[in-house]
Amino acid sequence: LGDAIVEDITFHYTQLIGFYQPDTVVLLPGNSEFHIRDNKSAEQLVTAIRQLVELDASYGITRRFYIFAPLKTLMYPQDHPTIDQTIQLLNSWAKTVERVVILDANPLLTGPDGRPMGFYFRGDGVNLNEHGYLRLSVLLHTQVEEDALSVAGNSTHP
Image (cartoon, rainbow, N blue to C red; front, side, top):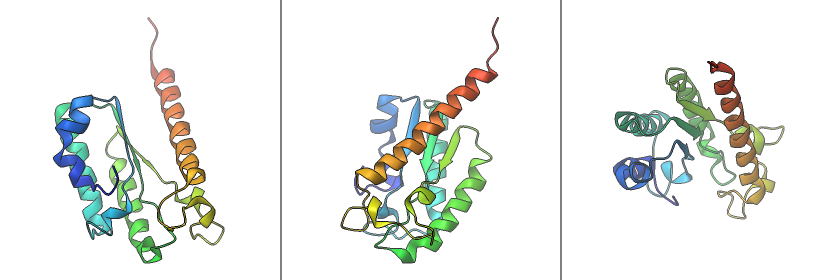
């Protein structure tokens, strides 16, 4: 949603998620959570995501939330410690919420030194290019398939 922050999605929930009533929501927090529009800490971002998921749960609309961890970028290396902390907090929280899956694409976008690889980013050093989005797409697709197989394996036949 461009430079939207999680609170924008929460505020416009009825027009976005509520109106369309999707089975699954995929959330990719953007750089605007830490820059441009907001200056969140790891705790603040996780709280905002939790509030969105809790709002959705109160309506009982979606079955699953796939939440991408914030992405480390070339332009903002100073955010990497905050992103690492956010990932830890998201993973801890998601263990308590069955319908939430955290996807961390950072290992797929970094080199052996742990820094983001320019190959996956546009020239601005912030936004992913087609190669970067392909990595995210494969990660999401793989997780969705695993979840579908898990559900199929747990179902009982009459």
